[in-house]
Image (cartoon, rainbow, N blue to C red):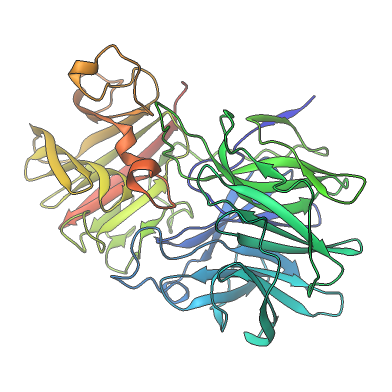
Length: 506
């Protein structure tokens, strides 16, 4: 029997929403304070996904002004749907503007400028009746419903309260579906932490009255020892063979209690069946499942190295808050990515940073850079108050740790002028104990982050520092995002010849 491994999209890709058009599936995720916003993925089998773009890739589409655009604000949970020959995404910019709709003829874009809707709350959804009536469900507080004009952004009826779950905290993330003779309302509740759950209700009309499923919540890993936790925020999709599936978010915590998840909330896939009374039965989310039927469509993996020879940055490169013109260039030094500082520190918003999500628990990141007269390097980032930096400038290489209110330089080495290679490794074995007194005890985990001058596999490489990874976890830093590893400049212009990201075996 063919199987697939969860998560199907690893790393910080939360709040997935999916739609099917013919034999193709398209999925979008939250992106919070990062630009470009709302990554778009394509699949032919629900298992193998490739990023084909971002919904909001123009600065005018995504206002994230400072100081309001702090960590874990920005773009919350989107919904993607295909209707009347067009793709529709509805979402919330909690930093500025509220709820909006964008459309496109092709999922790769270009996507329209936002049409703002006079609706409060977050996590909006779109659903259409056969006569074209459009409904938007959203959270504000509890679940509410409004009839809208999705083209003009006008509210035509409502909003009015609807079914809001079983009494668990934070009912949110509604998705409304017409399936057979019933309307189903799928929601998340219990909070997006370990108590996360999926519940469902149904009615003959979107206006209700609503009846909750007797088995609610229909999915939750709360209180279990399953390796996948925080399961919730699901969206349903049917395959061409008639089977049903749910994409949802979850986490993979590791280490000593309370366990720490560092990759953020990821996208998982699980099968759904229907009982004899017409209620969905959602399978627990396992690390390995029997795969959907039909043809298998793997995509080539992204290259390990980006040489920055393309005319534009690949869509997986993201920057916190903005990526203003003049802060980066692929043409100023052909074959190099040149980053020009827009702020003197990574400890406050407004700096120059280009990174990618950490997608594997064990990985190695290297970059060849020329600091010139500037200052910059590699950073493993959760937010402005939680990051580890491997930095070159002023004739030396430094390792700097920022953990909450504390900032400390852990290592310094002199280096000659000119290009050099910096490497960061993340490993889940041989974890460093939190203090020498605890050496030999059970590692606290979840991983160890090591900084190197040079290539660890090449002669002459020098280890600089090893740091415990739990301080760059959601349980310590708080918020809704995961680690992002990337390049930065905090003084002058720093040029990067290449950047490697290599997933490593355990």
